[in-house]
Image (cartoon, rainbow, N blue to C red; front, side):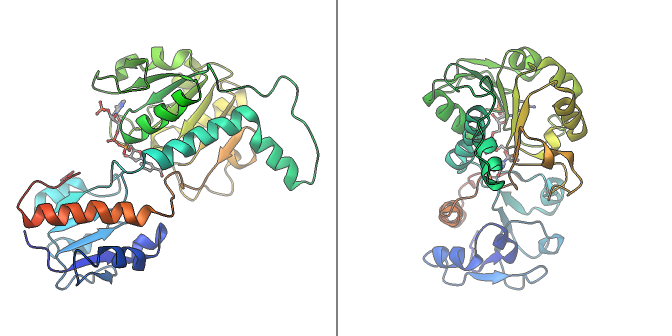
Length: 308
Ligand code: NDP
């Protein structure tokens, strides 16, 4: 396949200025330009943050600038023979730090201090509220790029890391690996449960009332995967009833999180606006992936990160 004209969709502006990616790709394709919905004349491939039905029949290859491609209709790509690649593999450090940062905040009460600072108050948390991450057990559900990024950092802080994945291979920094059928065993004794699976038919609402009941009352949920992996109403109930102690949440069933959500007001819930992977160098990582696949395409080699 010969990529002569590469388009950078303006939806990329959700994560960085599209011009940055155009500049970073100039050495690969002198014809790279910014495109908008429906504007794919002469475009062979498009790098995008959001799906647009109009590129079917127009472009040969779509690169999704996210790891999660649950908003992209994979079947339609397969039917139309359009190649779809994703950006898995680049978020281990950013999301790993976000997730462990949430755990640190929840343990060390940094969010409590910041809330007090916003009120101009000098106040200490209850004496028995802060704890250390050292020697706490964390179960990471999903042991791919994100999960391993968390495991490595959590292990570095002296946490005891367990994980859940479909295949039994045990990655570095993880002491025990469970399969999804043993999810309840994996989470029952964890102080933190971190979610890092893709949103699929199997993982949709994987965490609901039953799982929150199984979790320790003093446990925290960290969700940096997708909002739909959690039954959010059940999560709110579990937080309100004390079935779990708190949560760090980067993703939600509805984004932006509606103003009416009780999650905004909960003291031991840290809400971040789906920025777990935000990084000033993100455009360079995307450029490197795209560059690699342009080379593969011209050599008729298999695309890296191909999902359809
Ligand atoms: P990977 O494909 O590298 O890893 C996914 C992991 O999930 C694999 O270990 C896989 O298991 C595991 N998994 C899949 N299905 C199940 C299941 N039913 N039960 C348990 N484990 C399962 O993906 P990434 O780590 O790159 O990304 C994961 C997801 O995180 C993305 O799909 C995206 O939705 C989200 N994400 C969120 C970001 C944010 O900004 N908050 C940023 C980037 C990603 P196995 O290894 O056995 O195949």
